[in-house]
Every structure is written in C-alpha cells, then in structure tokens.
Length: 240
Picture 1 (cartoon, rainbow, N blue to C red):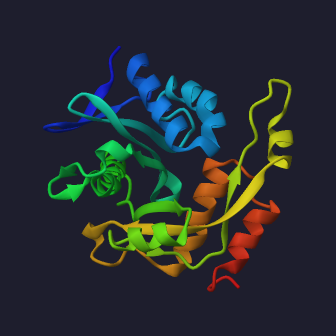
Picture 2 (picture 1 turned 60 degrees about the horizontal axis):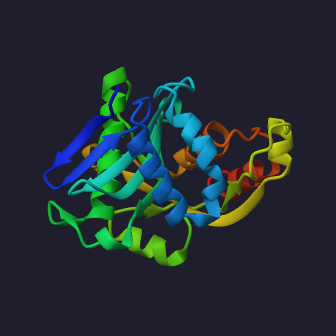
C-alpha cells in the first residue's frame, strides 16, 4: 500500500500517511517531528503506532498525518483531526524545516498554506460524512509571539485559560490512569480559525467549551471531571 497524495501544488506535494503503509515517508515525517519538536520527541513511538491505524480508529474522529515534500524532499508536517460531535477540527502539530520556510504556494508561505489546507480537509471530511458544516479549526498556540503571527492568518484567540497536557515517556507497565497522574500541564493559548464559508457565523463564545472538551477530553483522553478540564471550563466568560 502506498501513501495517498492529498495535494499536488507543483513542487509542493502533501502525502497522507495514516494507514498508508508508506514507511519511508512516515519515518521522514517522524524524523522531522523529533528534530523540530525535541521536547515532544518521546511521542514518536506513539505516533508511529497511530499511523498504522485507519483514519477512524477512534469513533467520531478522522485523523490525518501529512508529510509535506518540496521537490521530493521532506520539508514539513501537519497532524490534525476532525472531531465530529464537536463540529470542529483540531490542529495538533505544524512544522516546516527552516530551509523551506520561504517556499510559497499560491503566494502564501508554506506554513500559512498548511494552516488553510487542513481546514479545507476537515471541511471535506464533514461533507463526506454528511455532517453539519465544520465551524473551524481549533489550534493550540504555544507563545504570545506565535499567536500574534497566527492572527495575521485570521485565527481568533479564544477567551479561555488553557493548559496543554504533556504525557511522560511510555512505559510498558504503566496504565492510562497512571499516565494521566504523571501529566505535566503547560499554560498556552487556544486559537480558532473559522470556516469562511459560514460568513462570520462560525464563532460563538458558547462553543468554546466544546472546543476545550474536543482537545482535553476527546483528543488527550482526560476525564471530564479532571481539575484541569474544570479549570479551563470555569475560565470561559459565559460559563463563569
């Protein structure tokens, strides 16, 4: 089985790796991930296993792992998912090798192009399932500088005090509950890229709770009553 080509923009090609069996491109993507996100390099074994599963391994989720090639060379990656019952996509990892950051697609820098391309994909996922239109993509944003940069792309900063769970390195005898007990939490921001086709009607503050739950409960697997989940929900203005 070979990887499914998702986008072909001339010198830039995006390969879908979930369930593809394309081990060479998967290892290229994982190598980029470990090099560009060294603080998360211990996630690579989890990601390698996840890539071997189908898009819908978790009910209600459509997962994507993309490798971006420029002139046949590994240049970037994007991992994200569509969460059907939350009517949104989750943007998880985005990275472009510094050597390729000036590459443009349709007059957009490569990173900006990928921000919009994954929104296009989850919109297509929803259409494929016959679901209501996706409201947009929810993004974890690590720094203030990066949030200001993303706001130039149309991303809205969400009104919530959010912390990203960071899992420990895997251990074969550790249970899921034990892993959750060992989590570290990094205060970061959440951003939201609306679906432009909804003409400004995509974002409503009352949806922020769904976006938080999509990440913390649906993606990371925290219990709904976990203190960090409750703290995030309690910080949303309409809920406080």
